Length: 405
Image (spheres, rainbow, N blue to C red):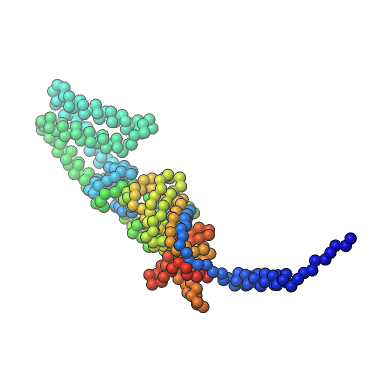
């Protein structure tokens, strides 16, 4: 038995034709780059992972070239204003001068001991304490103790000064001892001509004697001159800096603010997501700390190529400012970080945010015209972005129609 044919009526062709017209309209819209979206209120969470650099609020203290140096503070020590940092021995100094001074001190000590009659408990106590510290210095030098040598040397110097002062008062000088005192004074005066005390005059801070070569270009006073090339070079491990100190001086130490520092990183010039000036962000640093830091963003610095600078590196320098303990970042320069933020406000489709001349923007449709509005992107993920106008005289409101860049 033959199958019965089904008759196609006119209604079928009408539906098919309507679908074809709809498909054609969609195709034209897509190919023409159009398409629209409406501004609405919403929230977005964003996260930026980037390698960057630590910039410290620090003062570099330099001194004239020297023959040798005796430090009076240790690496990472907190100091106040007028603290003695070190004593430098000027060029031309010879160790024979110090040897002569030490020999005179030994001769005086020996003579004072001979003049004492009977036992002296105070002197015996000082001798015992000095001997104990001297033993610790030797053990530390051999690696048998993990104590700090500089701290031990300071303790030893303090005890020796205490013994000298005690014996000066306990022993009445005869002509020979007075002669030794006079010789010692002459030798000390001679030594003063060869030495200079380095006293901190830059206020309170933390002392560091280590330099990585970037102190002159990555400083809190030069934030506006930091560029993409500099940060990118450091992140790649290339040291392209050159010293700017004079031939007659050398950097001696850094005085670092313990609670004020920065983190700088770069983003691509065509990426709308970058920091927004004045906004707060949460930051975590890989490998160095489990802490979650809160920082405030400075105005991003945009670098574009021009005909005159065809080899310049394009991009955006983002800088976060911290007002918390610098901790382990005292001597660290390059770090990997995650910068996060959750924002609420005017929300648009992520594809509606573009860039023009390195600045994020959206295109607002009003009747038959389209206007470009520069925006700050507070937060952005793969689907949506929370934005606000950069300029006070430009307004964005919920319900406005946008067109794709």
